Image (cartoon, rainbow over all chains, first blue to last red; front, side):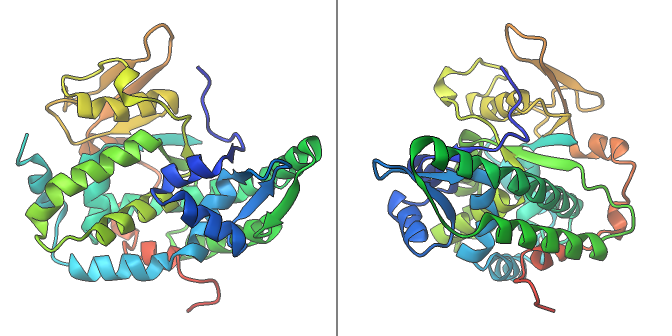
Length: 90
Length: 231
């Protein structure tokens, strides 16, 4: 079984949606608004380059603002606090 | 290049605890992801063109050349904000089933940290991890992978690390994954010679000799994803 890193990949819209946990409709919206790179196949399907998709995330979400908001909410949390919550059912 | 795979016990503290050492390592992994992305984007400018040419399809959407330039600019911005010599060859590798497991665990444990945790917060965490990952392994069905551990929920992280040929699987789960927390727990992909070493985060720090995490500003994770030109 080969290692997969450093291999350029083309994803279907379904694979892209599953990877990002968004709907296929969201991926199609990003395609229609040209937010992500794609290849349109003659049958109408799309192929999306993986690294291009990941790089485009900064244009599809304001990740910095999402991270800042989460960090402000959890400013007092330590690694140990999170691990205690994770382990309390084990 | 040093691929790593993170268990939920490491990645969730990294995203939820804004000042911890796991977050600081996530910043180092972000530098690696940006380095990987600029390389892959350069390669990918040819791949979609070849696909379009061979199928009679058409290229469209965001320009890969422009994305490659942005990745380069983001990489340089973060590199310049990090301590001189900070390594850029650590690569966070994920798989779709592993991302699903991160989410499952966050849904299960998150309300114990914050009863107001919303589905949108879980989406944010997924976006954050996906943005920091350098590569995604081939997909697999978690039901069909070998039983590496005594907890079926922990098998996808081990399988992902083996598929990724990871240098390290970092896990603070000493019950099911790092069962020899003072040393290394080794896993092997059945029928192959491929192995991966699982270590706790504190053991891993013994191997992270080329950067002092005390000197890594954990808030740089926000900076890494600010729009270009933002100061």
